Image (cartoon, rainbow, N blue to C red; front, side, top):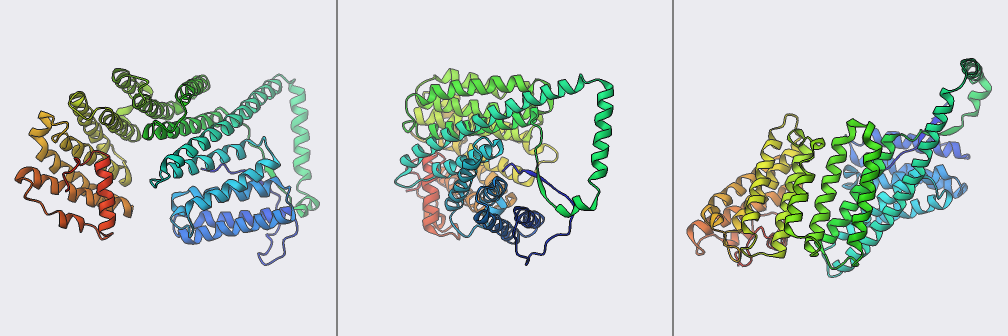
Length: 501
């Protein structure tokens, strides 16, 4: 989420919107008014919300044409553009490609950095834009996928560098704040009283009519706290996790030195986090989850590239998700993350050796992921989206168990339970399609449910049974979309190669 700046304004009558804007204060005032209106409409009317946000961007842009060196106008314009391009509700309302909106936000952030290269908020937000663009590029499955992933890795490295600079500045300001606090606490009580009296006089003076008429806007500089530093480090861990995920999906894309660099960089970050979070017990669970997600992604990348063995992968993955701070038995987010990590572990084992060598471990990993998701769905207060996710992931795990019954794995236990696993998958996917509030996820879940039902019939009654034609027409999105989804399911080993022929 973009980091907003806080502004304070001395009381005065609001300018009329049709009034000509002449000063930076008037441009800022009008832009913030549009932002406030956008925020009020975001939940109820996303289309109206994005129109107000765009009006705010237009106002800030007009102000920059008149005052091109004003950092507040530049920062606000960039921040609102990032909000439009990254908030899920607003992204759905975009009338142009997401990549274009993100590139525009990046250009605005780069302009703001030219005006103030050491602004920590701008540095943080710029790294957010770069990460969002990298994630979008990494999802490109076209002919240039490898090139896109290589470029995505470069953007992520740049994002990490910017946020490292941001953290260094924040850390320095935090030390300065602590020193100022220490000096203030050592002041003589008499001096403290004089300061209080002077402050009171200033406050009384600010009530005069002359001050009220000025109506200037002031940037409120909030002190850097431990939470600020933790937020920045958590964002760093998230970006590193994304980088590792790209390395996992395409091990040959990253340069040879990337893996040891990520190991060293992540170790340094985690050491800093441990030091800073000692007096922040309320953040330990959040930190433990971010660490576990990073460790999981790093281990997957290391195993797929041949840098670690399966024993190390399993031992360190299990240890990361067994951390006491994670409170896994009471954390919906943690249980879902652990299940995703287990499914990724199975995928890595399958990619490296899809035969019988690791079949027992794969079976245990998949059954563990299903067992892990059952308590998550029973936790009181679970959101409908999270509940849908638990069913979707259990469907995937069940279908993966079913697929193990077929060559080249042909795992005996999987063969004995293939029909039941296919039936379980069909039920889980059907539940997910009913629970999810997102149309695309609903369509995918419904198709997967139909695939599971098709496999159940084919396995129980033989290859002569099961109508592939009905399956291809199972979605209102059309056969081309269905075929694309089926190809993805084969690539993800959810469906055995050739079984849908």
